[in-house]
Amino acid sequence: MEMQATGLSKAIDKLLFVPLLSLALVGSSFLPVAALEPSAGLAAGAEPAVAIAEEPPAAAASEPLSASAAAPLLRGSVTSLEPFNRQILLKEVELERFAINFRKMNNVQGRWRGWRYFLSQEAHAGATAGGLVYQAVERQRVINIANEMFLDKNGKVSYRTRAANRAKLGAGLVPQIVGQTIGAAGSGLELGINFYHEYQARKAGYGPKPSIARVLSIRQEIEDLFAQRQAAALAANLSEADLEIAKAEEAVLKDITSMGLAEYVQFHVGAKRFRAFQDSLYVLDIAKNTVGAVGNLMNLKGLHERRPHYAGPGGVLTLTSGILIIGTPILSRLYGKAVARMHEKSLAKVLDGVEKRDLHKLNEDRNRLLQLVAARTDKSAISPQSCSAQTLALLSTYEQQSNLKQCQLELASREIRDGTRAATENITVGTAVGGTKVTLGICSMISGFRYAQQGHKGNSIFQAGTIAYASGSFLTVGDNIRLRIKDEWNRHRLGKKRQLPMQVLGDRLKALDAIESSLKTCSGKSEKKE
Image 1 (cartoon, rainbow, N blue to C red):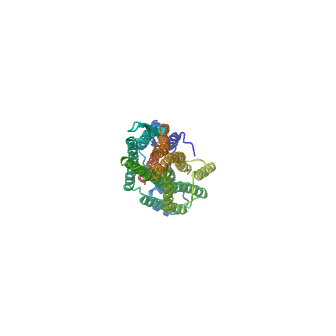
Image 2 (tube, rainbow, N blue to C red; image 1 turned 90 degrees about the vertical axis):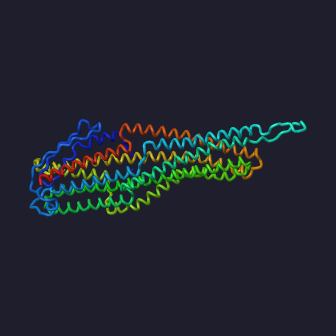
């Protein structure tokens, strides 16, 4: 879970409706292949035109599905299993649609989330950098000229140590406190929006427990249909050639079922892991800004009350905030992985007893089915009554599913690749910026605890930390802008190719809707003839 996603939506457009859904699979010995051509407006998003030929009535179609499965035939045909194939495919469509909707409902990332978060964090970093620079200028003024000359009461020239202007130092703390408040509020807003989306997902039936129960129910229904299909195959007394084709069809159907279940597990775990990572990121962001703001308030109180030793406890809080900055990206990812493992355990029953199958296995089984049909065709003249028409139509559906799986695999690979790059960048920048704030905290502690009564020395030590954290704040400002530009460019580039995650998933839902509609149309025609 890296493949190239170039031309992804074009591949879907070309392969989605071309020879699909001649799968008018009825319990008869003859089913003509449907004439399927993409409509002229398909590339522009128009619905495909599907024309399905009428089938002549057959004796087998006059009986209910259960009766056809139970009644032994003198020499049956593989087409007697096609109603079961159709029902299994409908259930597989339902399973895959549910998995996609689960992912969408549990991973809502609004179009403007990036901009909202950018503005709050940029305001925080910019205000902090501005306040620190203002303080640094005042502290440097004192460092440049440590002593000032004055005349005493006797008219003699004397010198005294210059002190930093407390009002200016306090004025430099105010924008820092405001920026930290804005940063915490921005993270709190995004966390609240996530909680609201979580509530919506649970209300719609896409909570963790109800979703697992729904998938297990669909799996049981599919397994029951496979059991009925196997019983019907035994009762039909199929020829050796038809029996081989029936087994090959079953293998492909089981491939799609296994991959559908695995896909749901992947979506479930991925959505919950990312949500846990994101929520913990916001919580830790609120914590580090709150702790930092309290530390600055402590320093501000010390300035106003002429208590320089307050810089000591204020420095402890600043140091703690810096450590949280360093640890936030790491702790968030660790928490996300822990939540993912927890959900993997609860999802174990979804895949319990299911053979793991992938796209490669699906293609192998599909090719084997094609070879069996080709061999059968070579041995007897091609006729409308042969199973080749129905089986090749079914194969078209499998091919469609195969291409859709390929598209989804590319989407997952791209998301993982992008996530890895973002993780590395966040950890790197977070460590650098957090390190500069740790430096400020240490300098503040030394100044307050050790040199509270030595103003000039305390000021010089404080200045080193101020310059360090100001540099880190400017780094944050620049990196925020870089990430925003990068995100918008990626959105523009991928959006033009219809390769954004929601676009790919949306296209896939449309494909599943078309398959389901065509399968139900086939079923309706079959019922009319019965």
